[in-house]
Length: 88
Image (cartoon, rainbow, N blue to C red; front, side, top):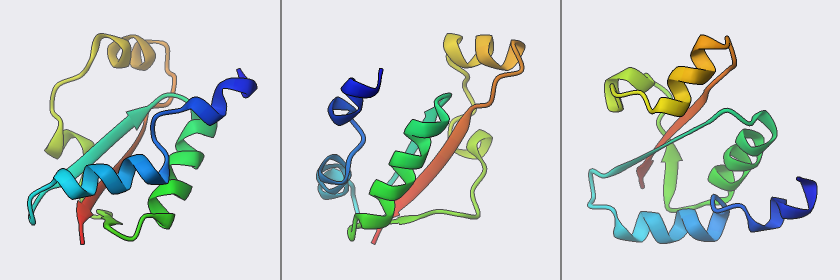
């Protein structure tokens, strides 16, 4: 629901906190089935100065396991959006 968008976990401040917890070679991967949320995640990642998008990595190389939700979405031919970032 649109009124809950401000309560979404993945925001710039959360990403900055995550970056502070990562080791120098650490990375963060995020998957979602919600296109509008994914756009918000990408925007937050762009604003985050402590992380950079890891463009050359594929989801199956970082997270080979699929969640039950992801299996269901893929069975239904729904998109699953993925982004990975590394600490700067």
